[in-house]
Length: 391
Image (cartoon, rainbow, N blue to C red; front, side):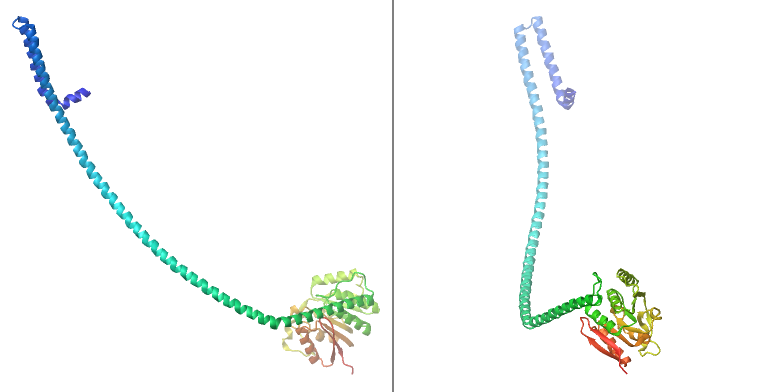
């Protein structure tokens, strides 16, 4: 197949070479015929044939040289064409690389400018931050200096006052603690109470005010004592009435939970034959038609009046409730409600009398019931004893 392709590609050369070859072969045949007929010796025939062969070879070589020259020319033309193409592509590549390089250089220059601008901004912001911090530091130093001076002035003026006030408070608290201990011991000794008595003070009545109430029980021997509120004080009053040998206690309690706790205390001390804890929820209270009072008293809550409807000849009232958080001047109604049910020599004891609300209640009672007189008792929380003036 390759030979056929070669023959096709060299067809024009074969057109010359084949006739030449045929002529050469015919010459050789003629020389051979002459030698055979004796007209020419075989040596001369061979020499003549050799000479013809050499000429044929020379002709063939010349023909081959022509073919080679032409092939070399074709190859040279192809190489030149390739060189032109390579040169064109190389110029294109160089131009593209040059454009990319120029674009990269431009981008780098732009980036350098942006970095320079960022550096300038950072420097400017840094200076501003430093200036701001320095200004804040100076302001802080000034403020601290002013604060130190103010503290020095306060120490010089306030600390001595605070020290004196603290000393007074400690002294007062110490005296109060001592008085409460003394009152507790005196109550225990006087009443012959049980070994485990409910604690006093805090939310409960303090020992010193209980000592006042017990002394009044001993002095007046009331047949009926009413307590506004209930708790530990109910037990102590029960013991006082038992020692006196007469009287009973009715304690009014607005909270069902605390009423039950007070009943349990009373039962634990075996005083339920003397002490009665009554449920008396807070309800809207209005002054009696015969009692003086302002029109706005209708909105004041107090113990349900039904809880005291059956009580008469009350000899002593201990006002230790309702809690001050239930209403302004929450204990005011005790006297208007109960004084009509009291004996002529009845006594009212108002606990927590040093509080502003109780002082206002005291002033109103004395103003609205001019027949009353009051005596101040020196107790931790303050106490006032109200009695009717002698006629």
